[in-house]
Structure formats: C-alpha cells, structure tokens
Image 1 (cartoon, one colour):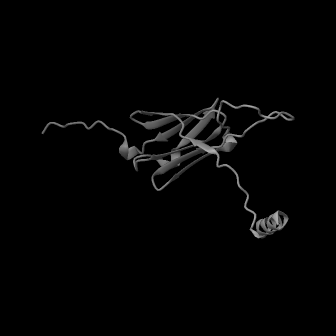
Image 2 (spheres, one colour):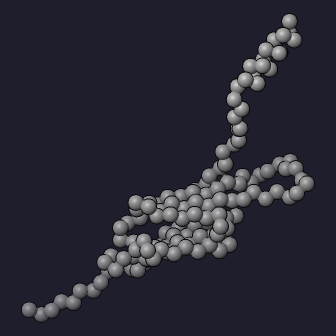
Image 3 (cartoon, helix red, strand yellow):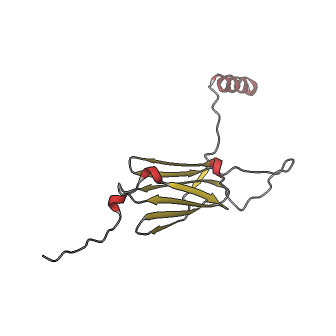
Length: 134
C-alpha cells in the first residue's frame, strides 16, 4: 500500500507546473554624504564592488534613482564552505528639487566611491542685488 501512495504523490508532483525558486538578492542602501555649495549639490555614496557598467542612475519626475549591481566572483573549482560577508546590490532614491539643472548632472565612480554632481540652475543660484540710492 505504501508503494501505491508514493506513485500517486510522484504523479501529482509531476503534473504541477515547475517553478524556479531562487533567493532574492540582498539590496543595501549605500551610505551617502550630501554637500551643498552656492553652485551645486554633491552626493557621495559608498558602493564597494560596483563598476561603471553595473551602475544605473536615472532622474525622472524629480526622483534620482541610483542602482548598483555587485557581481559575485567565486574561484573556479572551489566550493564556499562559510561566508561572513553578505554581498548584495545597492539602491537609493533621492528627491531632487526643480532648482537642479538636470541636463548638466555628472557622475563618476572610482574605487567604490560614487560621486554625483547636481548643478543648480542659474535661476536658483544666489545673487547679490545692488541697492541704488533714491
């Protein structure tokens, strides 16, 4: 009787659609410093393990979206027995003022440090107004 039950279980399992199950990758919010000068806002973000080709920065509807993918490198022929460092991708979003000149935004990445420069539009820059004697 046990054999009949096992066959029925196998048949039921075989008829179910196969779904690939994989763990969702970890996503970290990178540490960010924000500096503001009279002419620009500068963001610096720690994104270790990310290279230029794996970095995506977009600005849409006043939201700056920063995503970085970290490729997992494992030595060929070796099996991971223990891991203390959890790898994952990076993602952060920022609200950006209309005072930023979106056409002039620049980004650079060196040694895992991302630098985004958001220049202020001319109308948003402070100016000195001269006072005339009446």
